[in-house]
Length: 439
Image (cartoon, rainbow, N blue to C red; front, side):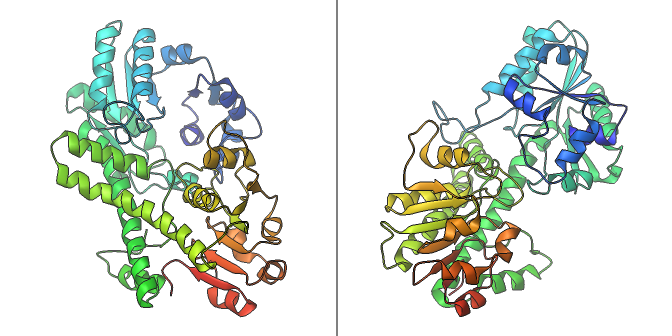
């Protein structure tokens, strides 16, 4: 929404939310989301044609286009628990629109949702509305956290799905005209509704599949003496494969990959495709195994016990340049190390101590004296028996590891869960250093 306001000054964009604290943060100098370049865009357009408000119903009534961007978490209850998307917030928005709208609206699904959700929105509005016509479009987002602003400025594609009717085509072209202010028309793909809804799930599933695939090979590399980075570079030169998403790591995280794959698994099961469901579920299984394997390797390498030992964890966000910790591999690794009675000290430049505690211990859980945070990487590593790198923050590449080694217990272990450090140099400094997929 900030990018639309930035690129189309004649369009008024109002972002609404019932959460007063969240809206207050968007109206402050400290935005609730860290994303490189976002602060500048928001501050340039805020109060001009970009507004943040808790007045939901007036904004809906005044709007021509309504982007539905609510959470669609995985269900934790009932039929489909652990796999299906929880659509209660989607339905709530649809009912609010039906209650308020008295003029024609274009409703745009921005949330990641299962196929046929547009049909649900249409039925609710038709059954509860004031007789006004509403067209429902699907416009999934393909940006990546950490590079979202750049991705929006120069997207690979913009996908818009709508009904193949004269009214649906007209609504699609209206939304096309918004993006066409800065996106070349040949990069704006239009499809039917169901193809667009499914494409988002499939895109994330394919990306996650590549990560799980290279991570499975990382285990084989460790067993055989191969180097996973060299293998990835060799196969990535094949134009049929390409180099992207072939970086072995402790495992993927974030708000989308696992949730969307599990949603895809549920859809396959629902439509009587158990073999397809099992195939995609194995991608998530491999990712979970990789995280457990990494933590187990830390323990086994450190003489089969970490009880009472200080482990410095560098990085908690699921990737660099974001403060998002949803499904981050760090949660699993820290939990496993705490279960082994280690003393875990975490440093992340953008994630708060409160967030780290809530993610590892559970929201509202009492503090665990064996889980603490540090103000910087050097404080985290002081006196540690091992350093564990879990996020590829650039600042970790330039740390003074000679200083860190001098302040650690000996032998000093280092486990690079992102393969961003020079293991040979660390070994020369005296570390017992290991990475992912390296013998």
